[in-house]
Length: 158
Image (cartoon, rainbow, N blue to C red; front, side, top):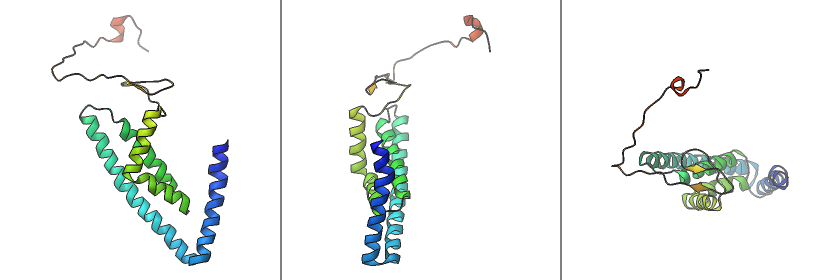
Protein backbone atom coordinates (compact mmCIF):
# COMPACT_ATOMS: atom_id res chain seq x y z
CA UNK A 1 0.00 0.00 0.00
CA UNK A 2 2.75 2.45 0.93
CA UNK A 3 4.69 1.62 -2.20
CA UNK A 4 1.71 2.23 -4.49
CA UNK A 5 0.91 5.55 -2.76
CA UNK A 6 4.52 6.61 -3.14
CA UNK A 7 4.87 5.40 -6.72
CA UNK A 8 1.53 6.58 -8.13
CA UNK A 9 0.85 9.74 -6.13
CA UNK A 10 3.95 11.24 -4.56
CA UNK A 11 6.45 10.65 -7.39
CA UNK A 12 4.19 12.19 -10.11
CA UNK A 13 3.41 15.14 -7.85
CA UNK A 14 7.12 15.78 -7.22
CA UNK A 15 7.86 15.31 -10.94
CA UNK A 16 5.27 17.99 -11.85
CA UNK A 17 6.66 20.36 -9.23
CA UNK A 18 10.20 19.91 -10.57
CA UNK A 19 9.05 20.35 -14.19
CA UNK A 20 7.24 23.58 -13.25
CA UNK A 21 10.27 24.90 -11.37
CA UNK A 22 12.66 24.06 -14.22
CA UNK A 23 10.32 25.58 -16.80
CA UNK A 24 10.10 28.75 -14.71
CA UNK A 25 13.91 29.02 -14.62
CA UNK A 26 14.89 28.01 -18.18
CA UNK A 27 11.61 28.40 -20.05
CA UNK A 28 8.88 26.01 -21.14
CA UNK A 29 10.31 25.03 -24.53
CA UNK A 30 13.78 24.51 -23.11
CA UNK A 31 12.31 22.23 -20.46
CA UNK A 32 10.53 20.22 -23.14
CA UNK A 33 13.80 19.94 -25.08
CA UNK A 34 15.68 18.77 -21.99
CA UNK A 35 13.02 16.14 -21.22
CA UNK A 36 13.08 14.93 -24.84
CA UNK A 37 16.88 14.92 -24.80
CA UNK A 38 17.03 12.75 -21.69
CA UNK A 39 14.47 10.42 -23.26
CA UNK A 40 16.52 10.08 -26.47
CA UNK A 41 19.71 9.50 -24.47
CA UNK A 42 17.93 6.94 -22.30
CA UNK A 43 16.43 5.07 -25.23
CA UNK A 44 19.81 4.92 -26.94
CA UNK A 45 21.40 3.57 -23.77
CA UNK A 46 18.47 1.17 -23.28
CA UNK A 47 18.89 -0.27 -26.75
CA UNK A 48 22.66 -0.70 -26.47
CA UNK A 49 22.54 -2.25 -23.01
CA UNK A 50 19.63 -4.51 -23.93
CA UNK A 51 21.50 -5.97 -26.91
CA UNK A 52 24.66 -6.35 -24.85
CA UNK A 53 22.82 -8.22 -22.08
CA UNK A 54 21.04 -10.44 -24.61
CA UNK A 55 24.36 -11.35 -26.22
CA UNK A 56 25.86 -12.29 -22.84
CA UNK A 57 22.70 -14.29 -22.03
CA UNK A 58 23.00 -16.29 -25.27
CA UNK A 59 26.74 -16.82 -24.82
CA UNK A 60 26.20 -18.19 -21.31
CA UNK A 61 23.47 -20.53 -22.56
CA UNK A 62 25.74 -21.82 -25.34
CA UNK A 63 28.50 -22.53 -22.84
CA UNK A 64 26.10 -24.43 -20.59
CA UNK A 65 26.19 -21.88 -17.78
CA UNK A 66 23.28 -20.46 -15.85
CA UNK A 67 22.46 -16.92 -17.10
CA UNK A 68 20.89 -15.80 -13.78
CA UNK A 69 22.81 -12.51 -13.71
CA UNK A 70 21.69 -11.69 -17.24
CA UNK A 71 18.05 -12.58 -16.50
CA UNK A 72 17.94 -10.21 -13.53
CA UNK A 73 19.78 -7.53 -15.50
CA UNK A 74 17.18 -7.92 -18.27
CA UNK A 75 14.40 -7.28 -15.76
CA UNK A 76 16.24 -4.20 -14.49
CA UNK A 77 16.66 -2.95 -18.06
CA UNK A 78 12.92 -3.42 -18.71
CA UNK A 79 12.05 -1.56 -15.49
CA UNK A 80 14.41 1.30 -16.36
CA UNK A 81 12.93 1.44 -19.85
CA UNK A 82 9.49 1.89 -18.32
CA UNK A 83 10.84 4.70 -16.13
CA UNK A 84 12.20 6.43 -19.23
CA UNK A 85 8.71 6.43 -20.76
CA UNK A 86 7.39 8.55 -17.91
CA UNK A 87 8.12 12.24 -18.44
CA UNK A 88 10.12 13.82 -15.66
CA UNK A 89 13.58 14.29 -14.31
CA UNK A 90 13.43 11.88 -11.37
CA UNK A 91 12.20 8.89 -13.36
CA UNK A 92 14.59 9.65 -16.23
CA UNK A 93 17.51 9.96 -13.82
CA UNK A 94 16.70 6.68 -12.09
CA UNK A 95 16.11 5.01 -15.46
CA UNK A 96 19.41 6.17 -16.94
CA UNK A 97 21.29 5.37 -13.73
CA UNK A 98 19.87 1.83 -13.76
CA UNK A 99 21.04 1.36 -17.35
CA UNK A 100 24.68 2.07 -16.52
CA UNK A 101 26.45 -1.32 -16.51
CA UNK A 102 28.27 -1.01 -13.14
CA UNK A 103 25.12 0.13 -11.34
CA UNK A 104 22.90 -2.47 -13.02
CA UNK A 105 25.34 -5.31 -12.33
CA UNK A 106 25.67 -4.33 -8.68
CA UNK A 107 21.89 -4.23 -8.26
CA UNK A 108 21.50 -7.61 -10.01
CA UNK A 109 24.18 -9.21 -7.82
CA UNK A 110 22.48 -7.84 -4.73
CA UNK A 111 19.10 -9.21 -5.82
CA UNK A 112 20.59 -12.63 -6.54
CA UNK A 113 22.46 -12.72 -3.23
CA UNK A 114 19.45 -11.62 -1.21
CA UNK A 115 17.27 -14.39 -2.57
CA UNK A 116 14.86 -11.92 -4.13
CA UNK A 117 14.77 -13.89 -7.38
CA UNK A 118 12.56 -16.95 -7.55
CA UNK A 119 12.68 -19.33 -10.47
CA UNK A 120 11.47 -22.84 -11.02
CA UNK A 121 12.49 -25.60 -13.34
CA UNK A 122 15.95 -26.43 -14.55
CA UNK A 123 18.61 -26.30 -11.91
CA UNK A 124 16.60 -24.02 -9.62
CA UNK A 125 14.36 -24.95 -6.74
CA UNK A 126 11.45 -22.87 -5.54
CA UNK A 127 11.37 -21.75 -1.97
CA UNK A 128 11.89 -18.94 0.44
CA UNK A 129 15.44 -18.51 -0.79
CA UNK A 130 17.23 -18.79 -4.09
CA UNK A 131 18.88 -22.19 -4.48
CA UNK A 132 20.97 -23.54 -7.32
CA UNK A 133 21.73 -27.19 -7.85
CA UNK A 134 24.83 -27.94 -9.88
CA UNK A 135 23.83 -30.17 -12.81
CA UNK A 136 26.79 -29.89 -15.17
CA UNK A 137 28.38 -32.92 -16.74
CA UNK A 138 31.91 -33.32 -18.01
CA UNK A 139 32.24 -33.73 -21.76
CA UNK A 140 33.07 -37.40 -21.33
CA UNK A 141 29.88 -38.28 -19.45
CA UNK A 142 27.23 -40.05 -21.50
CA UNK A 143 23.66 -40.37 -20.32
CA UNK A 144 21.62 -43.02 -22.04
CA UNK A 145 17.89 -43.57 -21.95
CA UNK A 146 14.94 -44.91 -23.89
CA UNK A 147 11.76 -43.15 -24.89
CA UNK A 148 8.74 -45.18 -23.82
CA UNK A 149 5.25 -44.26 -25.08
CA UNK A 150 2.59 -43.62 -22.42
CA UNK A 151 0.52 -46.65 -23.52
CA UNK A 152 3.48 -48.95 -22.80
CA UNK A 153 3.62 -47.56 -19.24
CA UNK A 154 0.02 -48.46 -18.61
CA UNK A 155 -1.30 -44.91 -19.01
CA UNK A 156 -4.26 -44.19 -21.26
CA UNK A 157 -3.95 -41.66 -24.02
CA UNK A 158 -6.11 -38.58 -23.58
